[in-house]
Every structure is written in structure tokens, then in C-alpha cells.
Length: 114
Image (cartoon, helix red, strand yellow):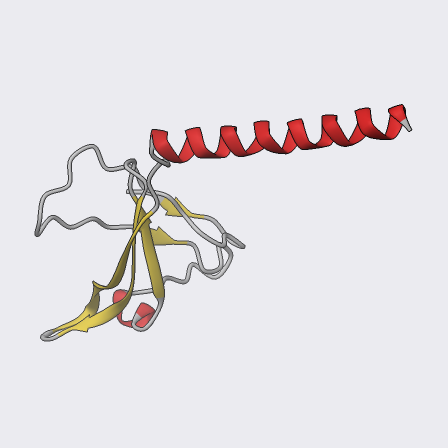
């Protein structure tokens, strides 16, 4: 189970297989000297996101679990696809840079000829 240290802004957990209905647990170190802890109920409403290896991000929040006073569950608000640009996009970008470079070269040669 991962432990999250004081002053941490975020934490990361790597899943090697993730099936619907699976759960995971974590500890957050609130104050190491006081021995405090945070239960799922204290995280209700917290914004959470998961980044997947394929470039997808799932954003949402934690909601109370009925009948489980110390538990919370993740609710997805939106899924963002942030995949790699397609080859046609790269080709257009490279062609655009080439045309811009040609225009600059022509402008320089005209300025030198004058």
C-alpha cells in the first residue's frame, strides 16, 4: 500500500491490470508526529484524476459510499483523449515549416539583391 508523505501535492499508483470493480487502498501521512490519518469520508468532494498509458485522462471526484462511513468512491466527470497526433498532422506541420523557411530565404535574397 503506497504511503503519501507530508507536503505531497499528488501521488501516483501504477496499475498493471485494472478490471471494472477493482479497488485499491492508500495511506496519506497527515502529520507524522501526531499519528493522524484521513479516512475516505474526509476525502469526499476531492478532485481526482487518473492518467493512463494510452494518453487518456479520467477526471472526477470522490463521493460517499452509502452504508460505509469511512469509504469514498471515484465518480468520473469526464474522459479526455490526449493521444499522439496522426501522421497527416505531422506532415502538414513539417510542410508549413518548409514553406515558412522558403519565404524567409526569398525575402533575404531579395534584400541582399537591392
